[in-house]
Image 1 (cartoon, rainbow, N blue to C red):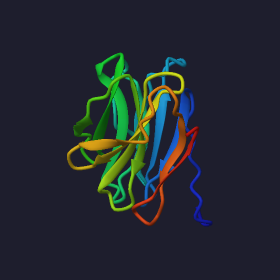
Image 2 (spheres, rainbow, N blue to C red):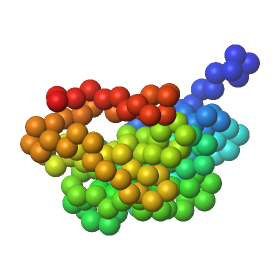
Image 3 (tube, rainbow, N blue to C red):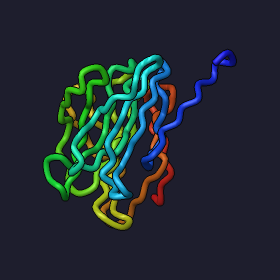
Length: 171
């Protein structure tokens, strides 16, 4: 469009809009009939939408774009229906790399601005969450603010200084 705004419509299915990459690619999720087994799709300027994930038995939970836009981090229960793992998916090829095997519900909160770290949440039940900081290359990392049975976190984000992790918490 002349005004620089691109109109996008996905019809016929329930969708979930996700953040736009640094180069104007749009990721979005589709589930089938509200089954929450969201599949992730990628829409690139001038190209038809294509699937980033394609396994209707698996729930895919968006985490974020890498700073260079080459990959995305997601949580998925592809290894075990009851447990989510963190995966990095190459946006060009769809190749997956398992960063960390999770216990229960794990959600990726996103990459640090330099791409070196990923924040994630491990949710073991009501008021029993752990905030994790992982090495993006190896998936290794440590728990931050682990308070069994007494912690909740929301809106976890990296600050632009590449060191500070921001979150709303009950701690």
